[in-house]
Image 1 (spheres, rainbow over the protein chains, first blue to last red):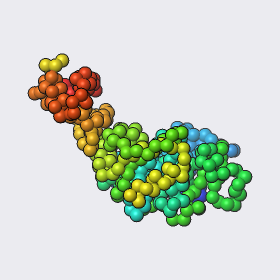
Image 2 (cartoon, rainbow over the protein chains, first blue to last red; image 1 turned 135 degrees about the vertical axis):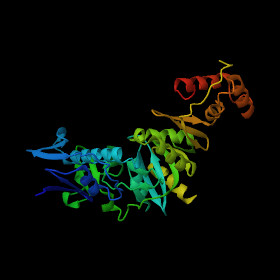
Image 3 (cartoon, chains in turn green, cyan; image 1 turned 90 degrees about the vertical axis):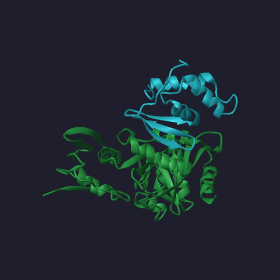
Image 4 (tube, chains in turn brown, purple; image 1 turned 60 degrees about the vertical axis):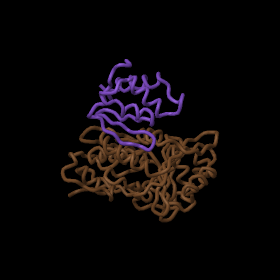
Length: 277
Length: 84
């Protein structure tokens, strides 16, 4: 009899069979938008064990992770499953980027770790914009459609301070945020109802964001935006030709900006002005 | 150098941008600005480096592009295996 472990990290459900489950079966759980092609998955097998306080993950018999933090386990599984899915499917360009939307149009936010993607997306949701992602964006390689990546936001210390979020400021029963290792995991749907966007086919702008002391919001050349966009790709080498085509299509049909700031309200108003303009 | 006739490799893929281009080979993607892309387009195996310099300088405002920069660009194309 097949035995499953069910995880529920707030709104995100994860189910892994702990004796025998194929990668293909795992993918069906996690990516409802995934278009399955025949024979694309080699037989990756995840095996989960728990020894006392430790969670152990093996992939095809080799230990890949040992942790006593369930959030780390979740992040690891999500990341590895995502990477393997992308590697094998070649259906998406995966970008290290945030993305928000309004009225069927998206704005892609490209920025390195710590640039403020999650902070900006969080504050834009307060303006009733819709979310596709705060950190990882999927772009289909055939039609350039942006797909939402529904997951909990990882709120680092900078944003925690900004929104006065402390471990004491909520209760476990709140079911909104959990803390682990100074990091907060936040399900945006608990604060912003129906905040997730449907897939988006039109990109209004691509913004290169950076956290810095000076404020600057200017148009940027497309070739420079292309450079940053491709640098932000995790799987460029597997899908190079189509990635270049879809990137060129997006950039040639949208506006491109630099947004440098440490003033979140100012940044939010600049992003909203793109939708309004 | 000035009499050489660089030729763009046929195997290089191109995606044009409004102000430049992405060139992709088997192992790498190269992002070019508008001027560099123009240089690359002139690398047809028939046009000499000197002629490329003249054509580029005619197309751009006076003083905007230096001869040395064009030569450096072509050398870089060679190093990156974009031209032969």
